[in-house]
Length: 556
Image (tube, rainbow, N blue to C red; front, side):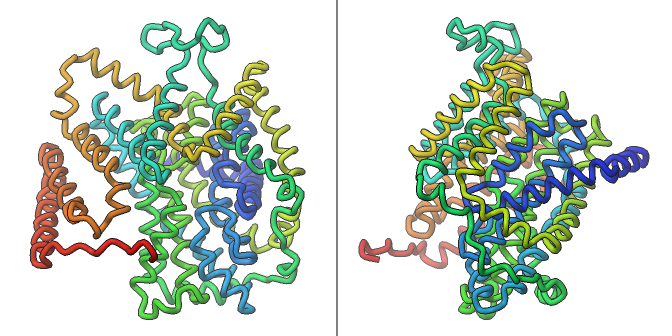
């Protein structure tokens, strides 16, 4: 173990790798500060650059982009009121008013250092929880893996779109794309329609870049006037200096808010597809509820900046936990990283940490180090970032489009991949315009082969379908998958419909059975605890008379 840790340190702290990580963090900060240029798009565009590198260097660079992008969104949000990324929306609620009141340096300092502390807390939890969760994953059979993939797809569909049906359709489309080509079991070509290029299926990289990056570029340049304008107006921010020491003292004085928000971020990151766009809003809401002065939120209170930014960066650690421990991406960025692992012939699974200890420890160290690089880069390069984001959108789109085509072609040196890039770019644009989420498609493409392989293995071992509900982990994931399909309805009608009052008690009661079926003492005890909690909720609602809130009036 020690030799693997020392080897990982040697790889990460090599001069070339440090330079790549710094470049990745810088690229992420710039991408995050540009409104509309998402973190996912930045990581996707990094992928072609990294597949020619060793696995450790490639993943370390992508982690740098990930961490930098999460923190970069706060710059435009605080200085212009327009969040650079969806994960920085709540930061603008108090960050922009504080900056506008004459304290932009303090606002930026609170955001930057909250991101740093939240990321470090999540890194500690990543190192602590990922190996333990991986040991649990070793108990999984093919039935459990298939149920886990099903859960990941259903919860992604339910969380990534206001329309559950569109989310499910997108996920099924991703599975169909993954099914094109030769069957992994018997080698029969499927859905090739006599086209020779389709017999080997689609390469992951052109599909990914087409759906996310190219479709986003097409969307951005649809509005000609908008494309001619600078990405962000920054003339008023030329003389801004980050107030580091004052921000650190303010944050540490509010350590309870920092810790609570970081834990919210980690928990949200563990859930597939939840991500920073949910965790920052949730942490802001909880900070406001816990505050003694909730009326101060929205006017520039430090707690309103600390909570969303700490949760935002902590989400990354949570997403990496499920990726490394179970081989299931916690968000769309880690789905891209799974694709990078596959390109390097590394199979993500619960045995990943045991089979690739040096790579696993390198990811741990890189995630820690990226936050320190992020702090240093933001401290010294703020003015440079503000100059870059004044570039017109059409100029940046042209450069990125050429880069996409070159990167895709370099993968296999075939023109077909460029056609795939354009085809899926148009498909992605159409789906964006129709309101379909793209995250379930990518998850379906990434996990389609895993689902098919494990379903085939399960049926080869036994054609008894009851094993999917007789095995505790499989039953556990199927129950959560079923409840995740109902979750959008519950969230919309919570407290206003009688059935929403029994949603949580029913979920707790349903999970008792698989937990009691598991080995050891902890999980059955946890099941008993959930049963007591469900009874407490039911008794409390009975005492309240099962009251529901009246529906909002049409004019409200």
